[in-house]
Each structure stands twice: as C-alpha cells, then as structure tokens.
Amino acid sequence: MTTTLDPAASEAVAGARDLRSQVRGFLAAERSAGSFEPRCDSWMSAPDPAFTRRLAARGWVGMTIPPEYGGHGRTPLERFVVAEELLAAGAPVAAHWIADRQMAPSILRHGSEEQKQRYLPAIARGECFISIGMSEPDSGSDLASVRTRAREVDDGWSLSGTKVWTTGAQFAHAVVLLARTDPGERHEGLSQFLVDLPHPRIAVRPIASIDGEHHFNEVVFDDAVVPVGSLLGDRGHGWRQVTAELAQERSGPERLMSTVPLAEAWIDGTRRGGVDQVARREIGRITAAAWSLRQMSVGVAATLARGSSPDTEAAIVKDLGSQFEQDVVQAARRTAPVGGADFARLLAEGVLHGPAFTLRGGSNEILRSVVARGLGAR
Ligand SMILES: Cc1cc2nc3c(=O)[nH]c(=O)nc-3n(C[C@H](O)[C@H](O)[C@H](O)COP(=O)(O)OP(=O)(O)OC[C@H]3O[C@@H](n4cnc5c(N)ncnc54)[C@H](O)[C@@H]3O)c2cc1C
Image (cartoon, rainbow, N blue to C red):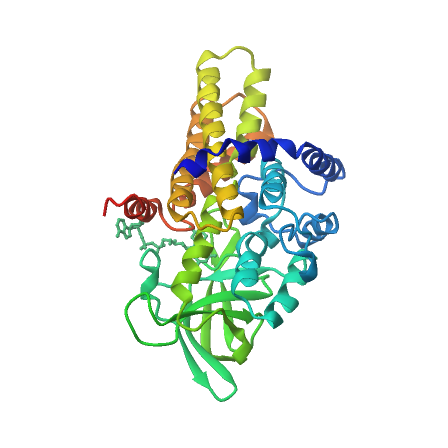
C-alpha cells in the first residue's frame, strides 16, 4: 500500500503545468463556442464523437499508445492530468473513454500485431470506440460464471450468449467479449474476443436508464461467427486478462470526479449566496476528502505506469472514490444554494446517476472482498 502514497507521483502530476493549462485553454474555447454544457458523469453518459475527434487532433486521445501504433507516447501521469481537466469540466468524453482507458492498454499488452495495427491508430485518432461485454443477466458480481460460449468452427469462432449493461454498444465499433471457450474450473477456460460491430448476428438492444437516456444495452450473440484473429490474448487466459483490465478500469480519476461539476456549481452558488457556515463546513470536508482520494488515485496510476497491477489499491480507490461521488450529491442537496439553473440540472444528474456509482465496474461489496483477499484477511 505504500505505492498509493508515493509523493514523487504527485510531483510528476503537478509538474505537468503546461499541459494542464493547454487543456484548460482548449476547454474554455469549446465552452465559449457553445460546444458543450458541463455534465455530471460525463465520461459515462455524454458521448460526442466530434468532440472526441477535436481532442484527438490535439493528441489527447490515445496519449499512452506508442507512436509506432499511431499514439503519442506520453506517460500515464500525463494522461491523468488531461483526464482530470476533462472530468472537472464535465466535458463530453464518453464516446472514447473506455477504448482510451482500458482497451488500448489491453490490446497493447495482449493483442496480436494485426489487432494492434488495426485498432490502436484508430483509437488515437478518436475514430474507434469500444464497449465492454463482461456482465450477463445472471453473471454480474460473479463474473466467472459467464455463460456466453465461443465454439471453434471452420472459419473462426461462433459466439452465443447475452451480455447486459453494455455501455455505449449502440455507437461502438467493437466490443470486447468475455466468453467460455473450454471446460474447467471457474476461472479457467475463459477467453476474450475483440469483435467488430455491427455484425448481422449480434443484436444491440437499448436499455433505458432512470434519466430516460440510452446509455447501455443488452447485446445478444446468436451464433455470430467471427474470424480466428478475433481472439484477444491467449485462449483460456481470459480471467487473468480481465482482472488486469479491471485494475485500469477501477483506479482512474473518473472514480472520484463524476460529480465535480456539481461540486463546482455548489461552491459557486454558496459563495454568491453569502456566509453559510453549514455549507462552508461541508465544502471544507468534501475538499479535504477529494484531496486525499486524489493522492491515492495518482499513486495507483504511478504503479500502473511501472507495469504492476495494483488490484487491491485500485479496489480501495474505487470503493472510497465512488462513495465520495455520492457524498458530494448528498452534501450539495442538504445545503443547496438558492437558484441557479446549472446547479439544479447538475444536482438532478447527480441524484439520478448516483446509485450506479457504487455498482458499475464491480460493486463496492465485491471490491471490499478483493481488498480483504489482497490484505490476506480471507
Ligand atoms: C452505469 C453502469 C454501467 C455499466 N456498464 C457495464 C459495461 O459497459 N459492461 C459490462 O459488462 N457491465 C457493465 N455494468 C455492469 C456492472 O459491472 C454490474 O452491475 C456489477 O458488476 C454488479 O453486477 P449485477 O448488476 O449483476 O449485480 P449482482 O451481482 O446481482 O449484485 C446485486 C447486489 O448484491 C451484492 N452482492 C452480490 N454478490 C455478493 C457477495 N458475494 N457478497 C456481498 N454482496 C454481494 C452486490 O454488491 C450488489 O449490491 C454496468 C453497470 C452500471 C450500473
């Protein structure tokens, strides 16, 4: 756990001042051109492919992909700085977020040369969006029980099964699927596939969220035949690959910053409303918590950058960070400033999206069991 408190990592992030101010300048120009309104949870629920392409043109998508695969060869900590600014602004980054955050590193680590050449440059150009096909109707927390099957056929693999909560599959160019290829113990015999969308035998059906928007889907594979080269990584190594991917998925700044645009509107409204001691105390408490969590998230990013897979630390960040995001909503609600259309809209988004924060990416109860195992307590 000492890695999470690595002061050098914080200094590296602080050192990227020029980069930070370039991103701020870009976002200010986009805001004044009316290209977006700040959103809570913008990394999950605000896709805008045109915005993504403008970001990519500045080198801020696929930052850590090596130049030989069309990326920018920047460090994970530089990517962290850009991510922080985008999240704080509530910018519409959901189109590319999953591909950029976890699929690019996963393809780089496990993909064939053909997959790297094909997908990585397109991700870095902001032209390839990828969704996650892990959860199933009866396999969420107990992911190892997935029933989707991949059967070897003459010209590749035939995929059958149903995935749910597949965020962004309606606009994704591919889905990374976890399926059973072989019998064996629970964690054996699972493999990952990188499958292009659309496909004539893959149905993407919308699931409406409580806010009435369409963020995720049910995805049905009906004997969908895909080429041999769709296998991602090694046959039977799916569990190990997915676990490493989840460390990328769980530890980033988005796990504590989904409600920062609301916090900013809350602080702004409180400041304009005059002295409110209760609100000020709450803002102080939230700010202190935000700072501590950020230090932990930076530490995990630094560990990932060194090539380790800090599963336990990532689970702690996600557990505490997602509770913090919900805490912001409740604190803002309790001490709500009067007026402000932006504040009311952001608060509504926080209230409606908040319950999902501690479920997505693995529920917090499950993460605590990951932490207990990591600490040798079970
Ligand atoms: C906004 C959002 C986006 C998502 N996007 C994706 C996506 O793109 N791709 C994808 O594959 N999945 C996605 N998911 C699914 C997500 O990963 C699952 O919801 C999550 O893993 C929980 O699984 P479940 O919904 O089946 O709940 P269940 O596993 O049925 O759990 C229900 C409740 O029981 C608790 N519980 C279950 N087992 C235990 C246990 N052993 N001990 C203690 N408590 C337990 C859980 O903590 C939870 O509170 C998304 C979910 C949300 C909310």
